[in-house]
Amino acid sequence: MSEKIAFITGGNRGLGFQTALDLKDAGVKVVIGSRDLAQGEKAVETLRAAGVDADVLQFDITKPADYQTAYDYLNSKYGRLDILVNNAGIAGGSFPGTGPEHSASEVPMDLLHKVFETNFFAQVALTGALLPLLRKSPAGRIVNLSSILGSLTLHADPKSPIYDAKSFAYDASKTALNAFTVHLAWELRDTNIKVNSAHPGWVKTDMGGESAPMEVSEGGKTSAALATLSDDGPSGGYFHQGQALPW
Ligand SMILES: NC(=O)c1ccc[n+]([C@@H]2O[C@H](COP(=O)([O-])OP(=O)(O)OC[C@H]3O[C@@H](n4cnc5c(N)ncnc54)[C@H](OP(=O)(O)O)[C@@H]3O)[C@@H](O)[C@H]2O)c1
Image (cartoon, rainbow, N blue to C red; front, side):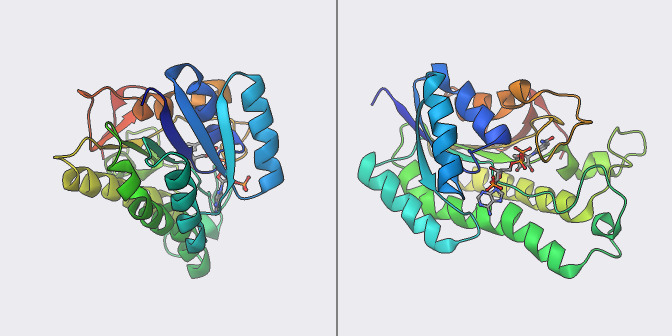
């Protein structure tokens, strides 16, 4: 059991793709989930050319049938899952923004539902579906791609750098995801599985946009580190590049 098996949702581009690249030297077989199979295959070609042991699975996190497909694929090929990176996510508007889609009082309810469906409900459902495979790992790791924008402490502090960066649907969905991290980590406290929330930084991906200060090449570090935590590493935490963030 020398090689670890990882499943990264939304691995065809952005931070998911970068995280797959960053797992290259960690003895990890990476399965990337991609909604579009052709895009996923192209990403796998690039990953393999860079030396990553990678495969692709067509996967849409908002399609419950895909959870069973992912379970069956991983179970039949490997019989377990060591690392789940819950990376797929949507912004629900552009960053930084000021339109109604960012407002707590005017947010369109269909947008709020859509963002929560992808960024919260689907993450909870997929994790539950794959948990039996993670329980078979000698060292299961679950990384929930949160954001500093999910921090209620920082949002409530007028002195914090995110005080004026309010995107209600997105922020609340990441706060809810953080709650999932804390509750699941507690539930799994007597197992070999660690569960943590990651803030990758504000990164120049399609979602992060051109104004973001961090390059994509730096953006996978937090996810990759939490995916490969040693047995004495933390569980139930919220981190950016090794630093704990306030909830
Ligand atoms: N970039 C930042 O500055 C930043 C900061 C904090 C947190 N994050 C979080 O980091 C994660 C990755 O962000 P990113 O910047 O890499 O975003 P991105 O460039 O927009 O990529 C998003 C990825 O998620 C996938 N995805 C979206 N909806 C999906 C669905 N229903 N099923 C499966 N895959 C889906 C996309 O697939 P398609 O190609 O098919 O659309 C794409 O692979 C997100 O959870 C985001 O909230 C990002």
